[in-house]
Length: 173
Image (cartoon, rainbow, N blue to C red; front, side, top):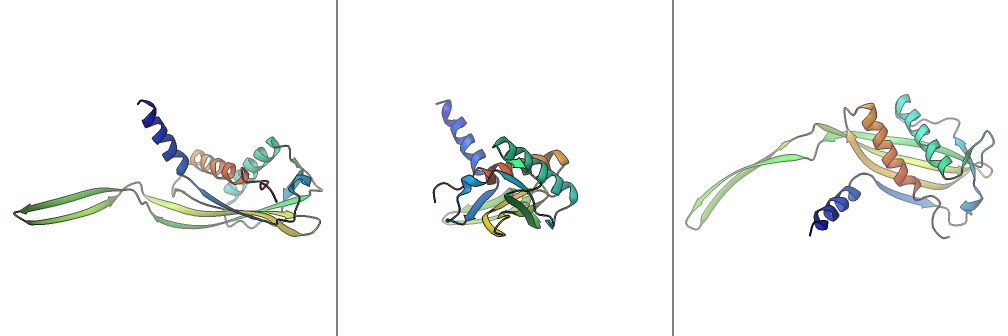
């Protein structure tokens, strides 16, 4: 019985965060790629600090998987993001109701908590350098606090990039 709350909590935590969609060229043998570098002219739409975070985290994750960053890479990596700000969907509900006999009346409302959030769609492209073709693409949708600290941004990008790169290489052809 003590395991049930832990199981429910772990399911909730694993379901939160970014969602990732992947597309790729089915004709490509992804096992042949072992070196990468970044597209020479990345225009991500993010600030330089976030660009550097993404590059640093991606380097770390790819190198853990045996990839080598090279001046003559087999893959170019490009990334870009679209962002929008919205109100937090977290609210505290307040309700008042009353009734008598067979009649009931109620009024309720929600008070937003937590401030605004940044909805971000981060796209990462893997481009075959030799063919100059897009061979793999991942699109992650996630959100973070509008006024996130550098540590919170780092944690967000680690989480998102881990989810993205678990889908590379694609399984099967």
